[in-house]
Each structure stands twice: as structure tokens, then as C-alpha cells.
Length: 502
Image 1 (cartoon, rainbow, N blue to C red):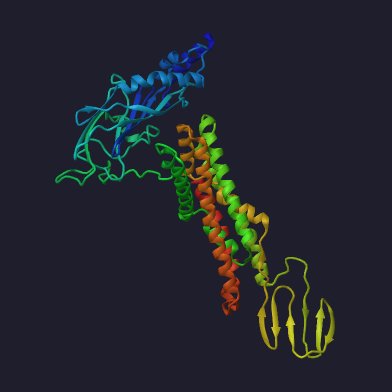
Image 2: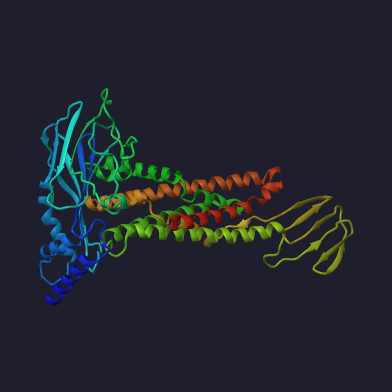
């Protein structure tokens, strides 16, 4: 233990002596971020404490309860639990002159790496308080008195929910540092010092002459829109009617979510154009999307809860997006090759070529000739190409058969990337102790998502059959449509891969 202590001291000396400090604001700083969000009946605070290497080293003596020289996750959790009451007590929040009592909803603590082998300390809180009896216009005053004697960055942001207007604010509606994760280089010499803020709010129209809440660039701040699907888990009491209504809403949210940009609608439609698909294929595709999406949400939720120190969810999402895009791209390239060869009359599998002339005609089969007597004449080219009857030439290109392998890959790619709303709902369900209800809502949401994709598939299937039975089917445009749709699938897959790498 003594050896580890001296190693830390050596690291501390190196950190101080290093010409480029790991923490952007310097190794001595203690930094604070507070976002205040006003709703109609509650006020929420998002508070972040960011300590550089030296104050973290000082606090580590307090965190290391067993004095073994290392900080375990249990010790960090105990430390966060210990400092939370004092931190909240130093947050002064008044509405219309009446103190608002804050209580913690969630907290987390971590040790981001710093310089000289040392760590920095980051503690996050989500706090909430009930608003007192309100007037038509209300005044809020806030001050963060924590670590007032320490140098560092102090940032305050004001947010508002829909239906609430904030005005005459001494603070702004947006932040600079992404909750103390990225500090602007041009401001390091003069760090932001926002420890107190005052503002007014109302649920009515803005009073005459009021200055509406603005962002730092001078634009009007937009309200914070709640995730309606994630809010399903926060009902006061789960009764049978409430649960049934929640399931209906979850299905509807999933169906509407699939209508937003992306989610494989283009790919599903383009794949089924020119394919001999059935309702059975469309149902299989929907089921695959449902299972994949549900399992993806569960897996990412578990990672967020139990393995966030090793695997960051925001790092997994681009990887899943890339894999999804790669699968779509592979399907598109394969289809493009097969459909193009079929359209050009190339032999992609065993076949033969023969000519008919049914009037006592010459009949050729792969190098041999024979004749038949008949009443009409027609010619075949059994390479999937031309077909002539009585001087009329047309094409019998067989529709491509849907393969289960492609359907499975298409369904997995459509459901592989979990919806953030579903992930938030799952984590909220765990936090609220409603895990079973959260699992059911997430599954029903996935069914709604799959139902839309299945409906899109059926529309293309039956629409294609209607077109195929008309004279329009004889046009070159319709015959080349399957080739073009396969090309679209490949392009969509490539775009997904590119987007995940940005």
C-alpha cells in the first residue's frame, strides 16, 4: 500500500511538472455545471462536478476506505452517497422567495484518466423539486455555493418544457462544454464564472416588454421536448386500464417511429420489388425485426447499467450502425448482380437455349435441330431472354425468388440498431422498479416498429403483382426496376456505413 501511495505522489509531481496538463483548465481546478429545467409543476436540476487531478488525489484519501491504494466501484458509490446531501445543501434555489427542497433521482461517479497516471473525478446528479403554489408570473433565483473557494469553470444553463415560457433571464438557454466534457480553447485563460442566476417563468403568454430566454448566440431557446414513449413508465400507478392503454400507445409509438427517416423502409421496399414474395415472407421479416430490436435494447440496457466503465453505449451505437449498413450493402450488391445478369439474359445457373418454329419448324436445343408440325410459330431463348409468338416478341424474366437467408439478414439489419427512446424507457423502468412492465412495453414497441415494416413490404408485394399483371409490365422501365431497386439497396447500405463512421 505504501508503495502505491508513493507512486501516486510521483504521478502527482509529474502531473504538476508536465508542460501540457491533461485537464484543459489545469490540474488544480474544480468545475461545476448546472442545468435548471422548468416544468409546470416541478423543477429539475442536472448537476455535474468535475475535479482535476490534484483535487481528485486529495479526495482519493477520503474515498479509499480500505486504504489499499485503489478506488473500487463500491468505494466510489459510497463516496457519492456521502457527499450528495452536502452538495444539495449548497444549492440555493428559491421560487417566489420560497425555498425549493431538492431530492436526488439518480447519481453516478467515475474516474476519467488524467496526466501522470492519475485520474480525474466526475460526479453527476439528477435532482428534482416540487414547485410551490405559483402565480401567473414567477421569479426563480439560484446559486451554487459548492467549492466557492476553488478556481474552475462554472456554467449554468436554463431549460424549459413545452407550455412554459422563460423570460428576463440572467443565464442562457444552452451550454458551452457539453456538461464539462469539452472546454473551448479560446476561453481557458478566462474560465466561465456562472455561479448564480435569476429568471422568470409563466405558463401563460409572455408579459409585454419581457425578454424571452435566449441562447448564447442570441437565438431564442427552444423548449425541451419530452420523450413521450419513455414517459409511459412514469405513470403514478399501474392499473389494468392504464397498462392496457400504455401497451396501445407503445405499439403506436413503435409504428410511428418506423415512419421516421431510416429504419429500413427503403430497403424493404426495394428488396421486394421484382421478388416473388408472399405474406409469409413479410411476416417472417416483421418477426425478425421485432426479436432483433427487442434483444438489442435489452443488451444495450444491461451494458449501460453494468459495463459502462468498460464499454460506452455511445461507442457501441456507431459499431452497430456500421454492421447493419454492411449487411444491407452486401444484400444490395448480391441482388444487383443477380438481377442485372437476369435482365441482360446472362446465364447465372444451368439453362439451355432452343428455338421453336411451330409450322413444321426447325427446333434447336444446344447444338441439335429437330422440327415439329404445328399451327403457329414462336421462338424461345431459354436463357431468361426473348420469347416470340406469331411475330410478337416479349420477355419472360422469372421474378427472383425471395430467400430466407436474405430475409433474415434484412430483418436483423432493420432491428439491430436499438431505438434510444426504447433504451431510455428500459433504464427508467429499472430505476423505478418496474422492470416487467418496461420489458413488455419495449417488446410491444418493437412489434409496432415491425408492423409498419411488414405493411410496407405487403404494399410493395401486392403493388408489384398488380403492375406485373398489366400492360405496363411489358415496358422496359418496369423490367429494369428490380435492377435499379437492388442498386438503391446497395447505396443505402453504403450510406449507413459512412454515416456510422462520421
